[in-house]
Length: 161
Image (cartoon, rainbow, N blue to C red; front, top):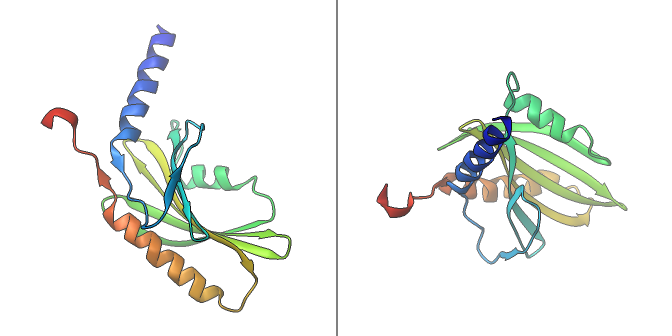
């Protein structure tokens, strides 16, 4: 019986994650991946866009505790809360500054929960030389991410159900 419940939960999780539609920025190309938690990765022009599924929240777990858990083991990375953003989903947006050999990668991630399933939509740019234009880079990254978040929706049910 326990195995049957596990299979049913797995199927439900797949159905849930397949119902969320996240647009891909113009001129980015989807690349193949074998990770079951990556719904898609798209790259181009020094930008990486990803849509990730990280399972269901466990009993008593909050979106904030999952975010902290996911970001707790990142090396050479500074993670800061950026803002809450509400559209179809309630997003918690964080900025990650990653140092790689005197260069930077800036990633902005929007986390959200839908039907108890935890998702992450990320945009990353770089690597680039450290610069005093950090505020401009952050603003441009947020504006691009905002375009994606504004258009995220549910996929229509097959068969008009």
